[in-house]
Image (tube, rainbow, N blue to C red; front, side):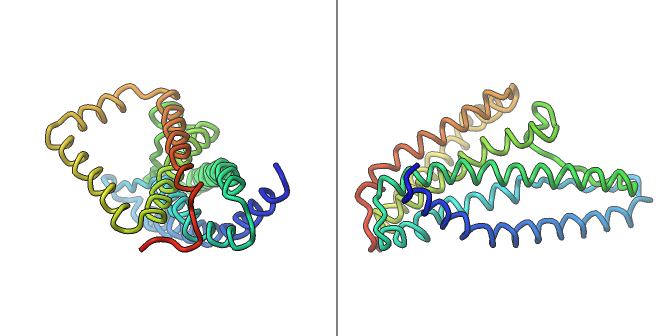
Length: 233
């Protein structure tokens, strides 16, 4: 890793640390507030609250993946960074950020679960994709990191697409994908594919998601190679 990649990686990291702190502060506040509600309603046998931390963290990494292009590529080019170094650094960053957010999210769930058990909150239930496998601290980190990388890579590719081709080009591609998705849903084959996927989930299911993310990252290289400071409208 050369100094230019290290410098950009440091810049990207500092840029997201503040927003990550705010994000997890809000998320923790929501968890505590909803847990208090659950504690006050313990006497109601039918009442249960389900909460999925990944729904929030997946959304967060998607936004960060999208901002890797619009928010940081022009600045890197102005500072004299090469496109190749930026492209490589962004891969390192997506690896690191996915793993870091997965670690924090799983740890937050584990700690709050212990607290809920200590105070007797039994109607607050976490749900997580790792429940398809073995729902524990380490498995949640592995599953989240693999899924988050896919989400970041897809949003990163979409951001490159919009930056290079403008609203017309990016909108056209997304429109075609939307039509194909709706067609598949109405015809039933897309629904069947999703059901078959989640009816027999293994760790390889999530590993496959990671490699799909790698594919999205790689096909974004032609867009990055010719990217300019002035994006198309």
